[in-house]
Image (cartoon, rainbow, N blue to C red; front, side, top):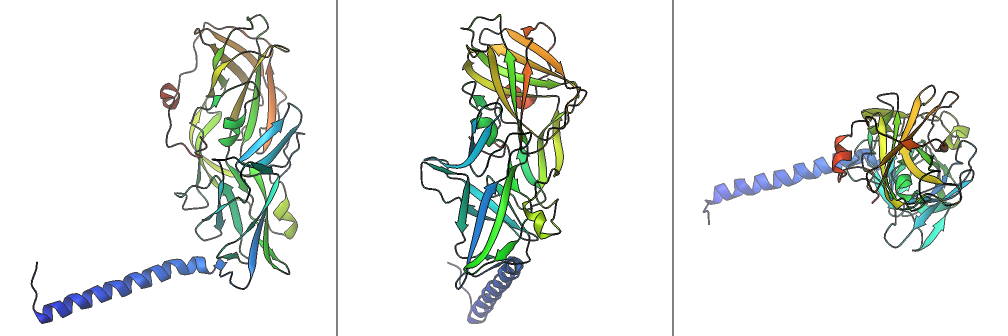
Length: 359
């Protein structure tokens, strides 16, 4: 055990006290910025009302949280979902501050197309702009660079199973501000899928019904068509009037980091639909524009055979956020040519760091 003289011990104690005071001041200083954006809720409550905007391209529905969708090709609905192990957590960013997490308040096993969150221990502040996104990620430090990673390869279990594809699409609100009421402040937010869901239907008319398919790829004639890794700025569109807060904004700022000419999904030994001969795949994509480009779908069966079909989107409109689109490939043939080169995450079929983590 080290031995010190009285004077030396006093000096050591003084240094320790100085360090404690310095750390305390540092913590107080770093938190003061967010203290201006959230305030104590001892005497006043704050509420967050969440609702999903109507889906575009003529397909309407309400849409929110660890969400699910139901419907068919022409009609879709969406909802918050709280299964036993999927209670979702959202992130709330104040302009100029750090995020806080909150859990969607749903009873286990229930769904809802809108929810009201009662703030606990804090309230929102008037005249401060906020943005909400999901799924929450602790490592998101800045609202202008929320990571969106689509390199995880979804496993689709049936011709109607779009769950994994939808869960890979980042969901976020446009910026919003709270309004005062008799019982407290309310922050109302419409949530949007920041990407789109593509339903790709490949017609396998002459192939036996018993054939089972294990992979589907969607390729574009444009080399950098699909962004599979990027960051989104949640505060790109700051409303300038009260009516702007609930609007359906078509734009978003997404900084692309990795692009590719194709995207891939795995199929769990799926057979074609016996009534219409389609094998259906669901692809989560970042907004893009297929106008004037050739799209090709490749389909693998469990025996290693590959089939392909192509269409030209000569009259296509851009693929916008928060939309569902259906493309039919009605002429599929056995393929013997050169496939698009696989990306590293497709060769290994593993991306444990991909975000959102919805699996």
